[in-house]
Image 1 (spheres, rainbow, N blue to C red):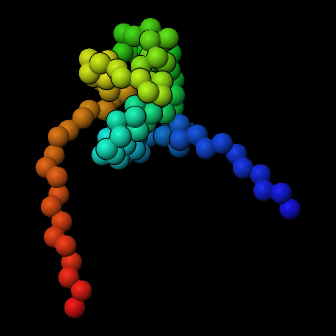
Image 2 (image 1 turned 180 degrees about the vertical axis):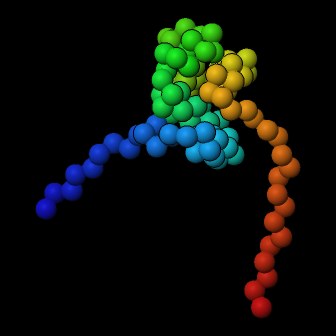
Image 3 (image 1 turned 90 degrees about the vertical axis):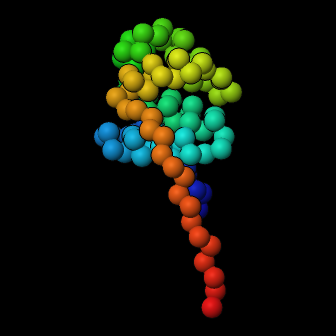
Length: 103
């Protein structure tokens, strides 16, 4: 029997503000900045690229370029995009977790 796989599209699951906020928070926590840029693209796709571009005062092509793999968008662009998505970035202290000891 041959296995059939479909392409996973995160945008299909980003259907409410809480899910979007959690998704972006986890992506931002990753050491690789490209993960966050890709997550922003997923959310923009879920919300509608044309509308997000308009809300962020960006051209649609500029938005696609800013979210392309390997892109290095300016912070100003990211800030506009974040605002247009209806979320915000919050800075919080890193949790300090004590190592557990095995007894």
